[in-house]
Length: 124
Image (cartoon, rainbow, N blue to C red):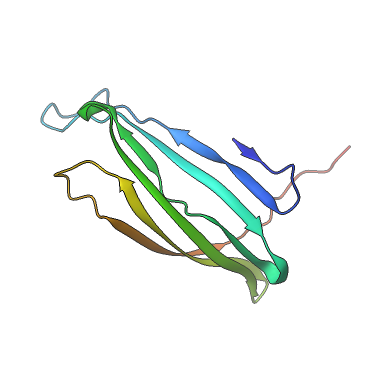
């Protein structure tokens, strides 16, 4: 669900909850809700800033243990040849995380995305 009704603002989220139902009985069951938030403000000069894209995770197989990152992202859209690309950096602190799982205190990511135009058929 994404809202773009306010100029220069994109806000929303994507959610999925993969559940295991078949496969090797020796493999650990999966049942976790992943929520990817989106909050981006477009700035002059093709720059943007917003909330980091790191997932909130709620592991239902382990009592609903949560991982909740809080962070920020900044980047810019530019052209390489004829292809628009987005380059950004983001960082977040895992303010809520399960104990004894090896989940880090911090996350950092550099994103490089090729942007392809949507091809649509003729309009009536």
